[in-house]
Length: 249
Image (cartoon, rainbow, N blue to C red):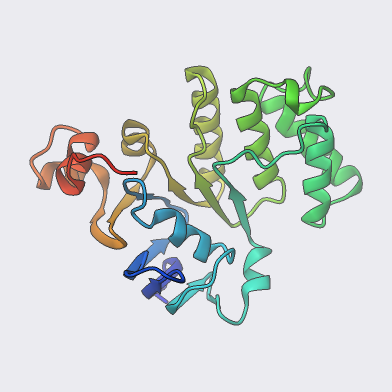
């Protein structure tokens, strides 16, 4: 691994049973410590598959992945202890309260007692959820669910945080709260790997990005530098220029 890399991906392939072509085709990337790295692409481009492999949720067909110096093939359990995952789908129990959900997830991470209780209270306060903490999640708005979903992935202070569409379907206020807290986590030392369809958010949030399409990395670099080098006015125009404007399913 490079000395400043926390994730090293080399020649990664993934082919699903029955598929004619790989979903991921020879992806190689270095993700640096303490950066906010965006893995972006159209629907079906391979980004969610790649992130699922990095999290140990899915096995690769071939290739090598090292996370914090650990080999994903042989040390997946050790890797899972240092990462946090915030999926696009809300991963909460709707009949439980926010506090009960967070207590459950905290215990899964090995937290307990006063340490867990204090962490839950701190995050609920920071995210403006304290007054509603004892209400069932089923009664929450979309933005409130997103905030609890995020807290569940960061309670254990992960070294690396994977985010899949963390602000999808939320109002501007919730989006701002989520992004500001993610920036704070990053400043405190958490490396963030982020996936989104929100191009303006990605342009302003990520320190570096890679665009993936049809399973292959088609560009990589700092957003503003990529925009300039491709003679585009903003990141959305760059994205459309590189991935085509045709609809994807």
